[in-house]
Image (cartoon, rainbow, N blue to C red; front, side, top):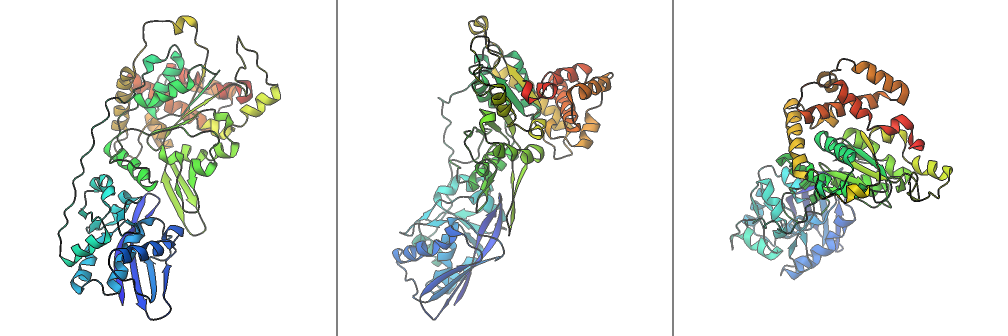
Length: 507
């Protein structure tokens, strides 16, 4: 007998409908799964056999073929266990005709334990977008993300309970998710705790207001990591759409611990990370650190210690905000619009330029260290700031500087101005402006042409660098609440581009 059961799959961060077909025929007892299944799906047959038997049903000793349609799209994930089990029960006539008729009204998603229990699986939230008005049968532990999708759903505990529901023996009602109270002892980092480094604080405020990328260069102990960890505290709150985008990514990555993610992500991978782990990919493409940092911050400490190949994969997401991973049979895209905060020492030993500690690096070592960061990558960084050692006077001062809350107020006002400016486009902030938008919203001030022409001649600026200068100047104007860019704004931006002025080897 033949049976059909609906489920869903995930491609990138989007769900699609999958029809699970089971055919039972006479012959040597085998179970074959076809339709481009990966290893996780192929292993499902062993879990399904045990789950069906331990739930009080018989597994038919016949030739069973499971087809996952459409056959040209690769299937991955353990959530195919439940639809395969239900399709086998229907095809083997262990469900009544009335129960089989009900199957078309449901979409089945869930991993099975060997005892028949329905367990949590990854990627449920994006899958629910492909339901098409049907009721979802999902694991109980996935309720937090299911509650975000605003769909009809039920959560049977195991395969036996699901069968009893389909037969009409019991009733199942959706469980209500209660969001846990936020922890009161959550650690909050504040910019007021950072002594000195006024220029670095200003650069990070501009970066937060316009979504610009920042590179901090300084001796060990000058506060680079301390500043980066406080950066998310001045970013504007997430909109519902942004939070939903992040939640989908974490759902696909099986890293979702609750419901909607309300905080901007802060990802700080170690410098030994591989290029695939950073950008995403693998045999079955999964989001990398750049996608996990979407709508948040990617902090790369010891920037020059990353391998050059790893750093170069950042060029595409920094420019387009999207990562596209291509394979022979498919191409998958993941969102990856983040703010890059990078930090590095001036040399391998970290003491080049120090007034108290002698540098032990040769000029060749210093050049090799700094040249790991290519010119095209540097062009994608809007602001570069050099951090000097904090003086004893600054360290010992009792009066605190501006708090993160005070800085955040200015940042939020600047973002609101940008939201009004780009209300009719997909642009989210100044850093993402298109060339047409730069021409429209970044009008050159009086005397501005002379400033940029001189800078281009002396600093060797490219056209991309000039665009980034105008975008950053637009952000400074937004922070000040003025309508037009001024000559002073352009001059301030040029102070944050020492790598253009000197070159990497001459920092």
